Amino acid sequence: MSSIRIAIPGDAEAILKIYAPYIEHTSFTFEMEVPGIDSFKERIASYLQTWPWLVCEIDGTIAGYAYGSRHRERVAYQWGVESSVYVHDDYQRIGVARALYTALIGILKLQGFRNLYAVINLPNDKSVSFHEKLGFEYFATYENVGYKLGRWKNVGWWQLQLNDYSMEPQPPVKFAEMKRREVESILETCGSLLKLTK
Image 1 (tube, rainbow, N blue to C red):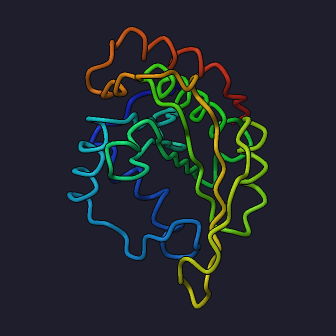
Image 2 (image 1 turned 60 degrees about the horizontal axis):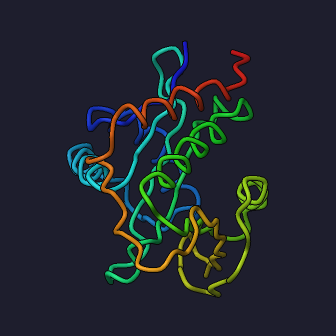
């Protein structure tokens, strides 16, 4: 049994089991210390007020997750959003990331965001290929912008346009204020993208 669903703070421990190795052993995230369970619960709850945070659950196990987050703080940037996705090693290559991202993109589009940004710590050919297959286009590299695991790291930026750049745009709808029926329809459709072989 598999599904894409909205995360809850109670998922924090399972999500951290996926995320912690990326923090401790890679520079794919610039987070340096594994958060505590309680602070991570608060992070999930806080993000869910404004942006979607989704999990892929397979036979009762969280196989991966994806979420949107603030691009920049100033009000004029409010139509931009950043995305992240992480998948457990045991669930690679069965469509988990694609299903999560397809759902995430669909929801962010409905919310009224214009630009979705993927920020990729380089080199990461797998992530670059994944994002470009979904329509993201490269536009910039920040060189030597972060230092982790004994190396200065470059960060590449990819962009996906979600909606037209209409004049006098309304602020994006907060995720907590979206119609649940619309969200659930997207989640159900995207759950069918999983190519389960387990």
